[in-house]
Image 1 (cartoon, helix red, strand yellow):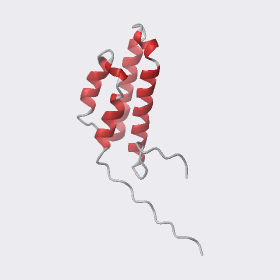
Image 2 (cartoon, rainbow, N blue to C red; image 1 turned 90 degrees about the vertical axis):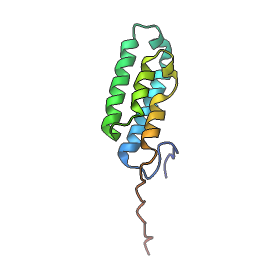
Image 3 (spheres, rainbow, N blue to C red; image 1 turned 135 degrees about the horizontal axis):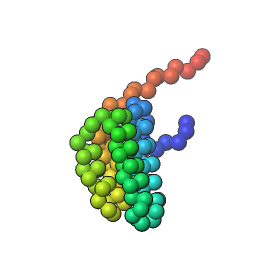
Image 4 (tube, rainbow, N blue to C red; image 1 turned 30 degrees about the vertical axis):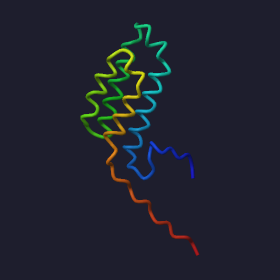
Length: 108
């Protein structure tokens, strides 16, 4: 049936699943690239990544108050080691209704 990732969610609308994937990838990039961004001269690229990710997430799931502290936390050095985008998207989409799976009728 494919790879099942509980956080991504099965039965969720595609925009919610894509938003969760974008958030996870953004946090992983920021954590993995910490040695590069920590030097300081590539910090504007990290800030640009945060702006792009924020805009994409707002486009996918709409504005949510959870995104505001995430923007602030991403600007503070060291706090971007916490997966803030992932937490914000989960919080913003936690009440999303699942799409009922189509009932598959076995062929006789």
